[in-house]
Image (cartoon, rainbow, N blue to C red; front, side, top):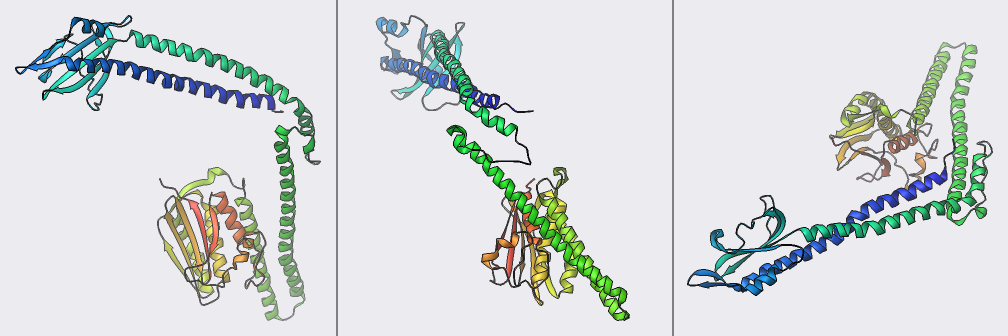
Length: 456
């Protein structure tokens, strides 16, 4: 089934535009509504402050002198009803509208000497501003309030004033996107037909010069994908050729030894050739196992459901007996420095990765020598380190040793060149990295694998 590019473009253009509109509308409403409300609150606060000069203390008693004309100016409003209240110490009534709310709800925090809140008075919702001032050393509260009809109407007006232009803009934008995508994709139809009819056995590069400027990067990327596929196919062919060579060599040796074994009259020679065949078969089995592990480590090699949470020190202790036997056989000192570290991943592949690191160090460290395996957690990363006292790895070759079937020219131990390639594939598959560093002592090699730690 061919996916419609037109539908995809319309979806990815119209959906963000719609989301942006839905996000911008409440944001724009807030940006306009908030200053308007603050301006109304400020006007109400100014009215409260205008009451302060009219309060006098005569013979220790508060006296509010407020001319009728001034009160008429204060209460003058064509839309809302205006109220005021003055309270003395201990909430003692001084003047104004008795019963007018002057304290905010219990859950509202008070900052400074000005308090603003919504309440009810005489059956109407009111906006209240209360200002605390000291007059002649005594605390007083100057309260003004107004009904919210003007504020409610302002909310409706702002909503309408913002919504209508945005709806018009949304409609115009939608139509523009629709017709723009339709006409812009007309030159792409030829390229789409070419891709639709292209066979996997006859992939050809698209002509970039014939592509429209807007989709030329897409055509370039497609051609680069073809190049990468070609390189991957060549790499796969090289891998198959190298694997065939690696398998052919021990098989040819085994066959030769078996042919000679049939004609060998000496029992000791027959035993020697038999042991040689057994050793070659073991090396062949090891090579096959490494190739299978490498195949499993590649993307899609093993099912994701095989991942689990486990303690890294426990995994190392389970695998350590085989490494200890190999170290004793080679006359090497194998040490462990295991700190708590928890991972989430494929336990089998992580074990194979560590086994290849340890085996690589044991194989190339001359006797007497030391190999140390460490694990620990640093922040949100788990570290696995294998340090040896061997000849080390030259800096110039520290990237090449991770390539498949690559071996150093002066390698002292026979091998397939797959060990570190397996390590890199497993580490990358687990979301980690592997690096080669110089040990603190300056001798040997230090291979460090960094993996995401499981913190819970």
